Length: 129
Image 1 (tube, rainbow, N blue to C red):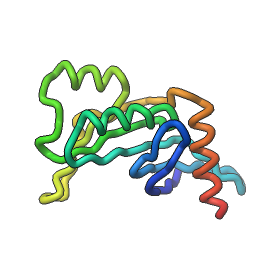
Image 2: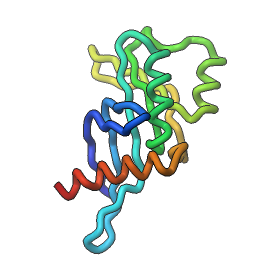
Image 3: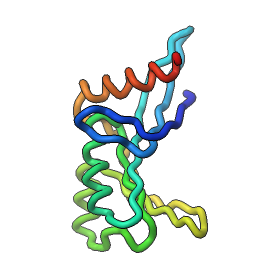
């Protein structure tokens, strides 16, 4: 598989993901989106990041909030809830250019197939353009 990375994918009713990464599978001359990962970056509020990231989980197979150090929930209950919801949480340290992956959703699927279809169509249209 190969992939494509882009910014600001807007899916009506589900928000605008800051960054998306789509795995692209290729069969003969046909390219198909096989997995979508959507990222929301926030500098000041992990709660807002999680709310937006949850909306992306309707069209993305994996949805991950990315926040700076010191902007993460510290209680185990919240982290356990995020994991159960299938929402990822990564910490990006700009000073050291490192990412600490607190939670990375595994084997996730978009919550709403029609929304995922819209996302796939938007990505595929970009591939053709």
